[in-house]
Image (cartoon, rainbow over all chains, first blue to last red; front, top):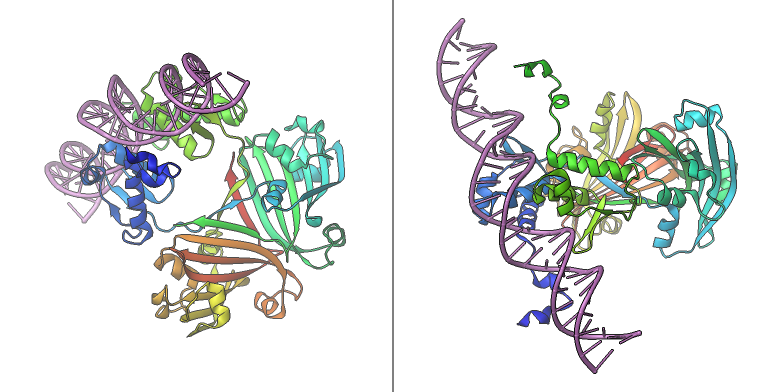
Length: 247
Length: 247
DNA sequence: CACGATTATATGTCTAGACATATAAGTCAA
DNA sequence: TTGACTTATATGTCTAGACATATAATCGTG
């Protein structure tokens, strides 16, 4: 058998599975505009005739396309190409340490302060907590190749994350610690722009009045806030990039 | 029949399908931490015994969880809980008109200028085009309840979007027009922060030196750039919000 | 012990059926 | 014409099998 000739690039030799070929074929027609938004896709019975296969096979292809949001399926009515998503971007924001090391730069971390205290009214408002309780308040700085990269101002609710009381945030940045120790179910990012005040300017080593990108991130598990964090990035050098697939 | 009593809330009456119940059950165990990252999930055979169903049924549940990134499946080895995703956010950015009307505010649009011209060297660099060709350059302003919301500075490549030559951008904002007339396959957003220069400050009716959020968006179809747009938002009043599900 | 061959196992794909269910379209009566 | 009822149809879910395939584990050999 000559199959061994293809060692090392087996994928190039073996064609994709049938359901995958069906999926890619339909995907291609949609992306090239051959089947525009609103177009009715052949029914499962028509497709099983076209591809000479069982209904479950075309069903699997169509189910995946529906889950991916490319098509819409309605009983009795049929399957239709969805109109282009009102831009839906996938922003991949790893924790900052991972972000910096992924860029091949050396990661630096300085803890500015870390206090355990009873939640103030402002803390409760920020965490959306209704009862009194304890929190950990952290300020720290991340740097890449010894240049300030971002300053972080974080609050962790000890009622929902009691393990945070014993974590050593002098050694490990709180974002990385949380990501690896605490499961979360929901999060929210808010991105805005401000000009640097003097504390931020000093920590980031930029001029007072220079633009900063601000990311506020709230993380929940089952409707209970785990942590609230505000990150300041120097706006002229830092960029948030999101690349994504249509449509 | 008493079924009519449930009219209006039929979903509360009918329990989810079996594969969905299996999926939700496993999802719950993962999210609550009962099955932590790295935990090996029972094999399909064990699950079909537990839920008294065919293998295809548990396979459908597990396939969806794998597609959603919650679990990882390896042949012969088994199925494992993935460690929490390095945050993956879904930023929903509709076109600005849709964004404003979705907020229940009145949308206003002013075309500042719209020129059809041969691409300059700067235009070609911005579009990543290697050949000379024509472009449409547009500047316009979006407002919500008669308050400036964003200024837009856009370039459309007429070589890839020839229809843009005849569109009337005095009536319809170019973002909306493109979204509804031109299919795209890939896009990229870059978010940064700057301080307002005098032209931007005047258009947004803010002070020179005030912070602005800048979004650069490039849109492609099959590696050919369709359009490049830069949006300036007033940074103190505008926020980009992304809410998403873990993990 | 190291390394190559074999085997067992869990997932991956696929089939040819079945019944369920939502709903567009057609039918018929008030 | 309108509203209520019926019907046809496309999708939704499920079964009990089948063979394919990647690979962890085992076994055998030098």
